[in-house]
Amino acid sequence: AEEAVRLAPTSALPHYILGLCYKDGGINDKAVTEFQKFLEYYWDRAYIRDFKTKAEQYLIDLTGKH
Image (cartoon, rainbow, N blue to C red; front, top):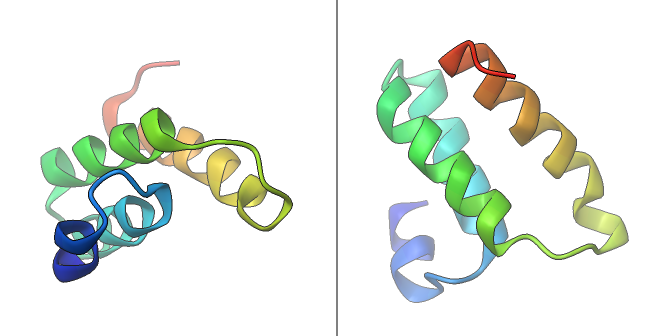
């Protein structure tokens, strides 16, 4: 996932996947950063729409902010 982000730093999906890896590994500060980057680079496409909703919820869960 880190390599995908390195190769496509402004593509949303690699940031989402890397955020999941960090979240699952308990590295919450890095997960938050990656989900924020995902949302920054996100643009509406049908296949990725569900990821946006999940990323927003993960950020709420990880930061406690709405």
